[in-house]
Length: 612
Image (cartoon, rainbow, N blue to C red; front, side, top):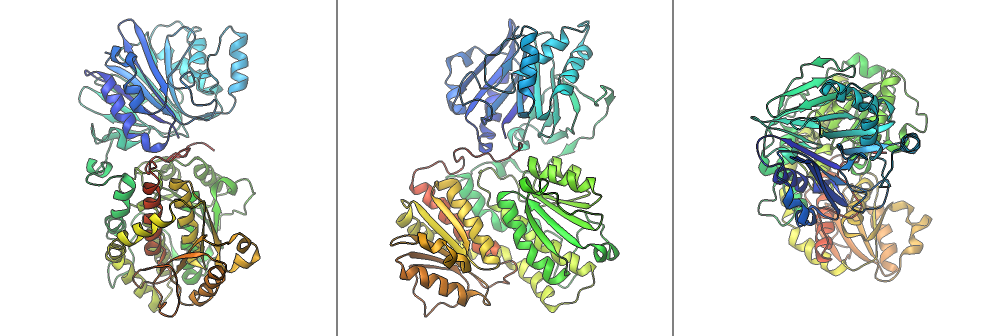
């Protein structure tokens, strides 16, 4: 969840590290710091708060080094404070470390080190790492970097948990050391300079050539070389990948916030996700998959596993898979999945969704499925991320960098890709439905229809002003509209800090209606003409009790009175969430802006949740 950057080259490291940390702000953090190797040793500057406050720290002006590491911390062990901020150093001030992840056995390791004369300044789990490296390095002959690598390897052998680690040491003033397990790490290759980051966008302005580290791979970076070592410290060659993202995708452009930009980028991101996969009057083409009719006929259950917004995207796919493929489909929260002893066999197909591709719970759930010989498919937005490397098959949404913490374009791109996947499975099975051809045609029309919805922004903004100071908001819908209600409620609470809850509309009378009182806002989603009349009845129940109503619909509501109606284009209910969620994204955005909040970096949240 933390962000890490590193630089080694012929330029001053400080401005490059600061630039990288600023680009990692969207991940969520509460403190920041950098360390560089200076002529008199490692200089470490850090503080609680934003990167801007780090830039204003008077000590940072002393940094002249051309090799350095940086970090934005999202507090896990120990409250946000300067002393708990990264980088952390060993007692002798010879080694500096930044770390993304969690060390589960840090208490035992602290006790071990304390018995061996080491003292601790912070409350963090990370501080054991530089001290362990020092402890093991002292036991070597100190004859070169291989001995230092052995000390790092011996250290990580003692660690339980997840970690991406950057290391500086005074004995190696022209090299830096990195390794990873379960937490993201990329290395960017430049000309006589190299970069490290936990995320590609942080260093995308400097290079488009990247190495993607796998678990228990080590790298030593010099100015004009990068050496890779496996878990036995044997050297090996690694393939370089060229990233084609345009850097402008990670800039705000003319928009006030990344979130607003990304909401308005949805037509483009969906067109990119559709790509050549869907062509009118032709079968779906997904070249990344090699799934036979015989295999699918043998599948007795599909699990879709994800967290948060990605899980809500997964919930929309269940309807298509069960309707057209006639395969039982369950949608599970990744953090619960592996702890409930799920029924997984070689006849189970598991689909895992993660925008970043680094979500720890989702990766752990994928590994569980592999242990039971289930086939796995990963859906992600990040090329070469951990989850796509672990899965049997991987599909990319091609939404481009999503910087705002609250997901928008990644979510709608996931729904589109899942719909395409469901149709693909149906076609492989030989299912014949006229509706499938119609559905493919409607998918091709989605980007244009989203553009129509975005024209409602001013109308939505005006309603947002009316309810910005409310304490509670309720969302309701039936069937697939309930999944949109869940996502809408999540968006509102994420960025406006208003308590918001979503309910299946039919459940109102089973308890939640007790919370409805005069002036409360209830947001209804109605896109399924088979269920809309029942949702209207539920909305009448809340209106009777004094609620204000905000409705997103493609139904004819001429004879019904609501406070605000946002009309969206007609579309199949199977893919209607792609359209109906857009007004809810805008509503959350404008409410947050009305309250003067930081839309892109909501409190306590991180973009990439790389710890359990």
